[in-house]
Image 1 (cartoon, rainbow, N blue to C red):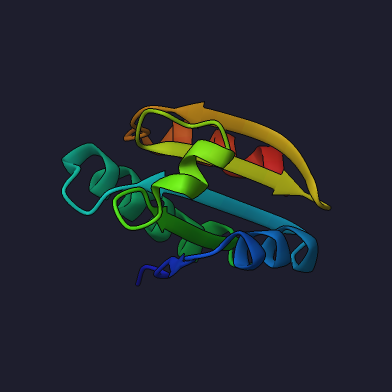
Image 2: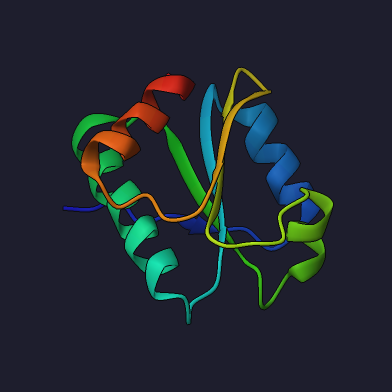
Length: 109
């Protein structure tokens, strides 16, 4: 069963997630984006199966465009990984191959 990502809606929530979790993956996407939806579901599925300690969250770029802008993302899906409060990886574009998603997770654990 997939572990559903939490939706974050403020800068404070994102900063709290970065500081409050050893391993954290944040995705910026939109509900209308097919590749975003597929990428998000792959992270949820693989995260639940293999990386349960990684906190997963997403930001709607439609509802919170200022957050995507502040984090420097102008294309979706955009995924950023944090380990011990430090950004360790980011990727802009779809991640649909399991190995690609697992490699991203491995950067944050």
